[in-house]
Length: 370
Image (tube, rainbow, N blue to C red; front, top):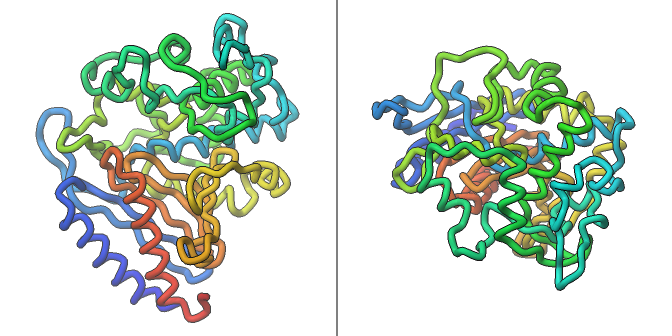
């Protein structure tokens, strides 16, 4: 691969993207390949601070990664599986208390709660509601509540209780696909039961500390192992920076992981190289449902698969993405890690499309690419 030429083109296109879209206030991109010996870590734009000032984007800033955090949750569950503390086939009722589960999944008059297995939560096939995006009975979505009540802090059990009261399940467990942040809240609470520690502490003990992810933390719930002088990158809804809103504590096990790009690379490298999970476990996690055209959802991970004409084989990669235009993927054909964020709410599709353009640039400069 002509690494210098690829880096030049990626940098130029990255700056053009930020400058051409007024909704992108800041953006971050890390591209790394051991095979080619290339490493690029970019930041552009600026963030409004909690005090009302502005700071220039810095590649070392912690970045809120939204639903990319689901891959961390899934890996944490898989680590507990490797320790023999649970099975993906286990009913969640084996771990969660009756009060929390009461009335959780009542569909067309039948209660399916006891039929929900851990695997159903991991690949969004439980049929459960999504507290974040589903429309509640009173018509006020959770995402709107976050913006209107920025100082409100959320506890995971309270979010599940709210979901049971205001939302409806979509189908019996295992009979379809419906993206469910509620399901990942339940996984977080399940982890707490199995490990006998708060979810953020388990995340740190099982993943952050062993991988020396010193500046990673769970937004609204914990602090990094080592403080950084750099502020958290701004996350925007339009022109409003919400990263300091206490209400973002609602994200929890479904997407609260916040870390610099280099720390996120440590996680993905360990996962790809078999230093975090054994390959057989990663294969078990490849139990997927159709998320969208060309994208399947497995245990906490998205897989971009070949769809003739629409999604060519050259884009085949796996990882996860978030609603803020965040992405963290590994491309096996290039041995390339692609991690970044556009930090604008509802930019999930734009984030993935941009990542695919980066892949195109890498392939064009790869003498052995296909």
